[in-house]
Image (tube, rainbow, N blue to C red; front, side, top):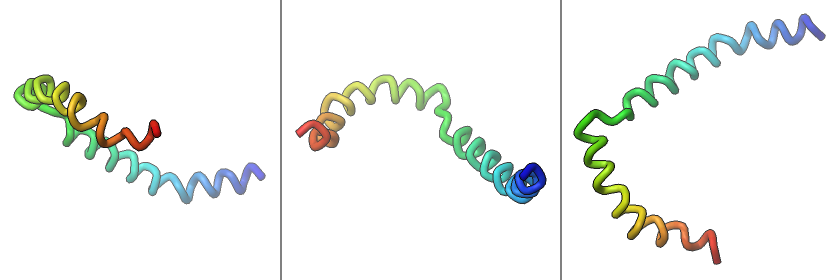
Length: 61
């Protein structure tokens, strides 16, 4: 059993490492800069007030 788990880990590690790196790159590319953060701070309350309730209202029926 231990050998099988070790083999499974050995086979999966490269793929999991690649996925982890890809996820980090994706996350970092979406991190807003100073201007984008300010725009988000101004627009998100409006978006939530006007769009969010309509787009999720089906959840509460």
